[in-house]
Length: 136
Image 1 (cartoon, one colour):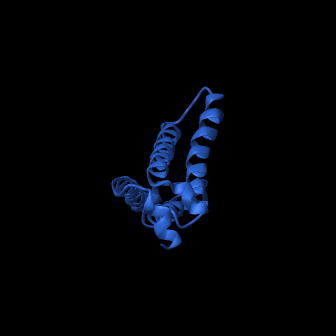
Image 2: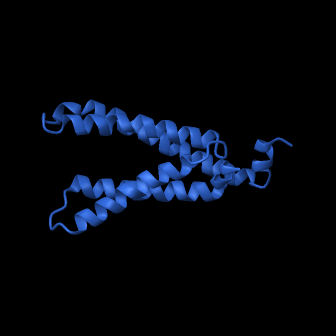
């Protein structure tokens, strides 16, 4: 039995399939947000264009990360953890940072909610696919 087969041997196929579908859904969603952002890019003023460009081009990067995780859940050590760290980190940081402020924009509230959802979905898929096994 190869290392790859051994890593997947005690992961139920249904669990792997659910984790894969969750991560594919996140990847597709990230690509959709990229397209939507690109189509609305003209609304940003010159003071926000660099930040919005950075954010916009991050969506296909995360889509790629989600797809790699979906198809190779136990092959790339640290990838699950990095994706989770980013999504949870942004949500938690903004939650604490904004929590100290009396005004919260709808956009920031949306980012917090979406990144919490992404972090939670990633965590569920990580457990289902036993993503920690990539470290073997």
